[in-house]
Length: 208
Image 1 (cartoon, rainbow, N blue to C red):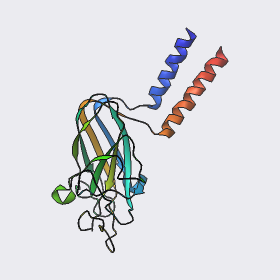
Image 2: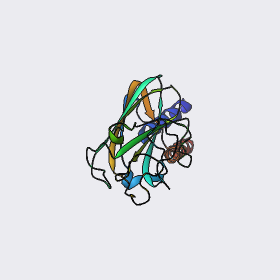
Image 3: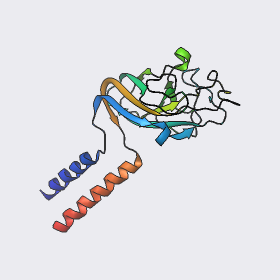
Image 4: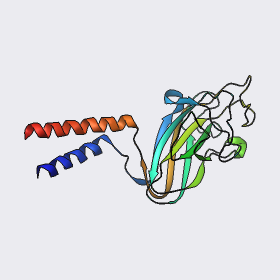
């Protein structure tokens, strides 16, 4: 009986701390690449997936969401700017946002490895949405990043040598599909959960 109580308590802690996002057929999240994003050297969007790097030296800011699905099928991403940022990043903008999808793993130091989808270069590279078949149980990484607002074309010389303004700002993203979609917490979140679980176990032992 004591073991059952401990397990129940541990489960409650995990749920309370949000160890895994609630599973649903639509996963929505927000972010701000200007405030929280790291910098990377993103792939071009002239091809899908990108085969070369778009910026000389890189420098665009990005945020990444790690997700898994429990049903294989077609899933669609929609991203919209939600406020003013830098460059051409304005509320409701489409041309300032690009999105990438990686399967298995995502390493910003090797941005051409694992990419399977990106926001196509339709409408002057303003198409930041995509639809792709996702496989149940596979780790996927959705990367939201900015476009070079003053560059000409998504080539290896984009934003160079004088056009260096990079877009970044707040956004809202939604991934929808036929199955449940779960956001996977980062290692830091796992560490918090494990710390809380250890505290619960220690507390139970003291009471016993």
